[in-house]
Amino acid sequence: MKRRGPWSRAGLLGVGLAFALLTGGCASAPAPEPLVRSYVAQPAGGRLARVLLLPARNETATGAASRVVDRALALELLRRQRFELVQLPPDVDADRFLATLRVRGRERTDALVRLGRSLGVDAVIAPVVMAYDPYDPPLLAVRAVLIGTRDGRVLWGAEGVFDAREDRVRRAALSFSASGAKRSQHGPEIVLASGQQYARFACAQLAATLP
Picture 1 (cartoon, rainbow, N blue to C red):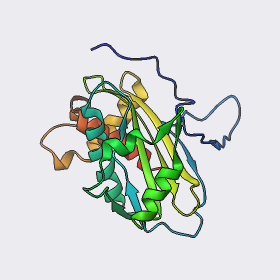
Picture 2 (cartoon, one colour):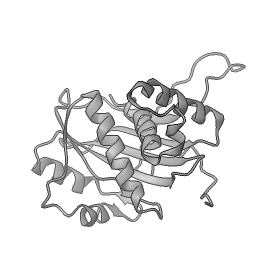
Picture 3 (cartoon, rainbow, N blue to C red):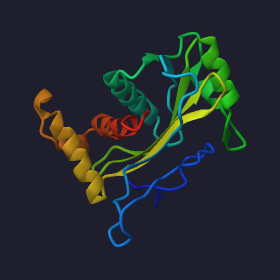
Picture 4 (cartoon, rainbow, N blue to C red):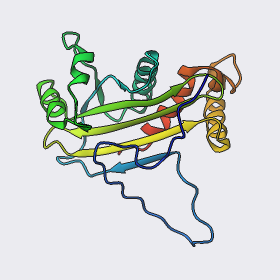
């Protein structure tokens, strides 16, 4: 399958995030580039108790991409138990709502805030699938933002381009899969053959950067 590309790991967050990347150490031995670039702000009003997870907006040509990421991200957030996870109510047309969120290339945070307030949540997570290819070597590019419903501030944002053609990404995926190998009859290589397992690996990396 032909791939879209090349993909850059900088500048993929098209939601106006200002990343504060702190570096350290000597110039001759720079730290390795992280798999995920993230931004974290201090939440106004303290701890987040209830958070709405929107379905992922799909910017790829593969219809299944958003469903795969939806399941993987929800599982990772539930596993971490940072907050109560809320889903869209069944009377909300998810596709129609997601179509209204992007105007002139920018996210409409006002719509997210209104929806979140109507559901009584403290924040809304809005994920986007930017690239998806489940075939070995798999590729998944995904980003997400966490918008506070009190004032519409971006509380967290993260993006990652997980291309298994890169050795460090492949090794990280196999390590992640090996840590859960006891729960499966398959070896760690299953993560490279299963689009759902690879999405779980990618979403775990994003979720690990949450405040």
